Amino acid sequence: MAQVDIVSLKDNADPARRLRLPISDDSGRHVGDLQCIDRSMLDEPDLIDDLTRWRNQSMPFFLTQFSATEERTRQWLETISLPAADRILFVICDPGGNRFGNFGLCNIRPGAAEFDNVIRARASDIRNLMFHCGMTMLEWMFSGLGAETAKLHVFSHNEKAIGLYKRLGFAAAESLPLRRTEEQGAVKYSIVDRSDANAGFDYLRMELPVEHFRQAHPGAFSTPPAPTAPAGNDRATAPCRPW
Ligand SMILES: CC(C)(COP(=O)(O)OP(=O)(O)OC[C@H]1O[C@@H](n2cnc3c(N)ncnc32)[C@H](O)[C@@H]1OP(=O)(O)O)[C@@H](O)C(=O)NCCC(=O)NCCS
Image (cartoon, rainbow, N blue to C red):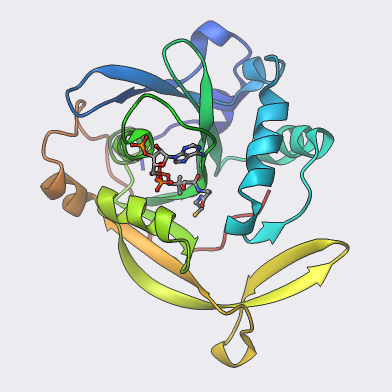
């Protein structure tokens, strides 16, 4: 894995130095950026409000389901998301800075990283916006971070998300049984043995190896791939620490 200091990227306090991953459409036109949520972004007007609203509107699609509040979102960003060396969250912005959702990575480790917190918040004039965001993220994972495999988890009944991930090239690798529990007003789904499952749907693990991505999208790499990870990088994926 390339030596990218994820924590320093998020520690940045200067908006001009913020990590911005350019999003291009099919013709290569710049249609926006994935802007890293760093310290410089925390006080942008309505950011916390947007993230909170988007999370609430997409709550049924995530492992932990609760009532998001601005206070809880800010606390999660400051105490969990920003300090974590293995996760990063981006806001999807058009060139005018208008926000359309968020797209993150978690479980960043030698050889692999996992899509996390993928949310399309509203419509836009940009066709296939989430596909282009996914392509941008995959290019950064494979070229910038030096990942050899992109991974993700998705509820097996989330057809829209699975459709997007298949268009990007992901294939199902495993179907994990889930158990639903309720505690202090929050719903939580946990991976369990099949005999203990009660959710009515599974947690699908999907994967995309870098060589499949290169074959499917030969023009995708605009920069040479970064050095690859050392051996011994295929340890089991821990589910992402939920927001
Ligand atoms: C999964 C998801 C990101 C896929 O987004 P997508 O690739 O745009 O695919 P959809 O089938 O949802 O959208 C199809 C069309 O509906 C419209 N659309 C999608 N989300 C919209 C929204 N929130 N508001 C208005 N219109 C929307 C768009 O026109 C889109 O087409 P376009 O990209 O060409 O403009 C999106 O459905 C979403 O945010 N779902 C809720 C959260 C979720 O499930 N996350 C994944 C967890 S693993």
